[in-house]
View 1: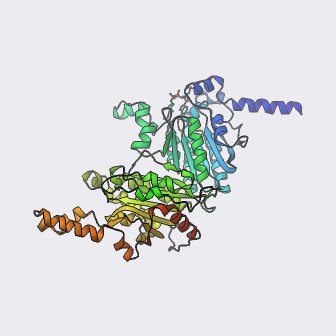
View 2: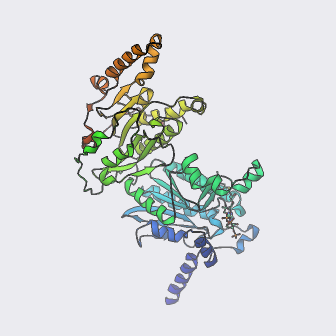
View 3: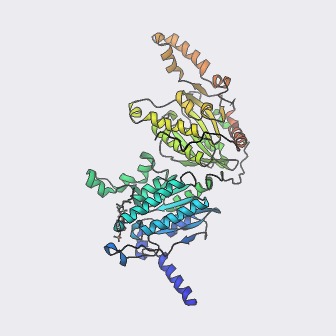
Length: 510
Ligand code: HXC
């Protein structure tokens, strides 16, 4: 018996070494942790239960029958994050570059199936070169199995991907179908094909960083939702995100004890809006003053900064925030901002997370660049996402709500449940100057007349009251009471029920 125990310990120790000490040292020398070290950081201490530690690949081509490593390049299992069950797989770059074989794929799909069955989140830690080239179609088939499960689980359990090394092929496409992707700066890359293939096919010379580094994917492509300086920071932030998320689409949002009074008022908000309507202010200040303990987890912070998306809590319960940012492009809605916010709204709706919208938007961005880039279709995504949402929607118009953007940003007409405006709100088809120049075009040469018309237009329309008179705004509220009003609205809306006609699924403009 003792022998057997010793032999088990030996086999375990060998499996834990993955590709061996040399490769582990190389991994550390690149500033990366190993798969197991990453899992240790992600999960609560001693909570990891590993599966399939002894699985090996079954391929024989290219001398692979003599190159078998227990675990086959991926560490899988489950554990807890602050006590809540989370399934996890971590690619082991020290074993065949973390590449995916048929057996490796079966380890991942086992975890995906269990996560779905248990209705618990799944986190993938990626550091891998895609399909195992020696296995050919068996590896491609394996990826197909992973992809299909990504899609079936989408909208049922949260799926999070962390890119922690060079990732190619299937190791970028599987993450692309999950809910959130985070990257590690300067040492993680995502591309369908790497710099060498790019050089051969298009004759472009690019570095990995230029082709698919964290900066590219968080600022240009919007493939990734956030970037962190190192493995430790990335994993700690994933833990923080998980704390905000429901375990699945039926459980409802988690509730954590909050010591922040929901009725807390903040007098400084009464002077947040500058006297000059063209002067910007920081909408993040409002978000931070409204959420519990100023704890806000921003999604896509570096992309389309003219709109802010992220999670906070009110009365200890998760809320999704969408807010125009007057500090960037005056908070205008363009294609990028619309796509970013639409995806966020759909995530919240899928997982029953109420949405609070803070609105200060001068309209959609005009111009050929936007129109040629499909502004109509991308803007429609946000309109569609809000209109189909059945979660509680609370909207606060702080200043401008102009034109189509008024309708889009969770207006009453498309499903806003509680719509507030600050006294500084201006709800109109467009700004006074533009409006007067169109409807009083004949007076354009006469500066006095134009000034008088502009004043008349401002007095009549540049306020929340025309909308409030029609019931489009439920109440004009004091800025200092915003947190209290939102908390009360969300409490009232907690058991909201909405009926929609049966359909297989909608056809959101993609
Ligand atoms: C088998 C692989 C591998 C792979 C890396 N390795 N990728 N083995 N199959 N796909 C091995 C290397 O041979 C090497 O082994 C070790 O892993 C480390 O790799 P290096 O190249 O030394 O590391 P690095 O320079 O950091 O480059 C990492 C990399 C690069 C960028 C990931 O290895 C690379 O480009 N790999 C190929 C990527 C690729 O084209 N994959 C197929 C995609 S197709 P040794 O023993 O020498 O140390 C795909 C289809 C899915 O995934 C379907 C999508 C829709």
